[in-house]
Length: 251
Image (tube, rainbow, N blue to C red; front, side, top):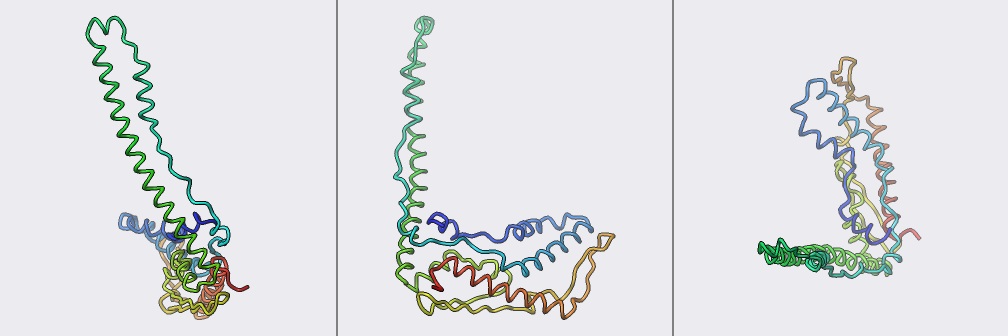
C-alpha cells in the first residue's frame, strides 16, 4: 500500500454492518413490536458474528520502501478557465444594427465585462479551495514519508506512531477489549490482550419465534466458553496479522 492508502487508513472506519445497525437504532422507537424484536435479534447476532470473525479482518500490507520513495503530489497549477471563457464571450460579441440604434450595445458590452470580473472571483475561489486540498495532501505525504524513513531505520517510537495513526485494532476496542503493544526490538513486538469476557460474551441466547417474538434462553456454559475461546484466539491472530501487515517485524 502506498502513502495515500496509509493516509486514508488513519481514519479507518468501523465494521460497516455494525455502523448501519447503530444508525437504525435511532428509528427503533417507531418500529412495531415484531420489527423491534427482529432488529434486537439482528443486533445480538451481529455482535456474536463480530466476536467470531474478528480474525478475518486485516488491513493492507504496507511497503515502507515504496512509501519512502513516493513522489509528492503534483504541483498545483492556477487555471483561469472561467475568466478565459468570459473573455471569449466578450471577443465574440457582435452588436447588430438594432442594438446600436436602440443604444443596447454598451449595455451588452458592460454585461460581458461584469461577467469577466465575476469569473475572476470564481477562478480565485476555486483556486483557493484547490490550494487548501493540495496543502492537506502534501502535508499528509510529508508526514507519511518521514514516518517511513524512521520505520525503515528501525525507529521503535515510529512503530508505535504508525500503530496509533492507523488504529488497526479499532473494532477490537469497540467490542470492549483492550491491548498493549511493546516494541522489544526493531524486529520484535509483544502484544498483550485484555478481554472483559463477562461483559463481552452474552449470557443469553436470543432468537425469533415463528410468531416474530424474541425468545431469550440462558446460554449453556459450554457455548459461552466456546465463543469466549474463539474470540480470544481470533483476537490474538488478528493482532499478529495486523502487526505483520503494518510493520517490518518478524524477519
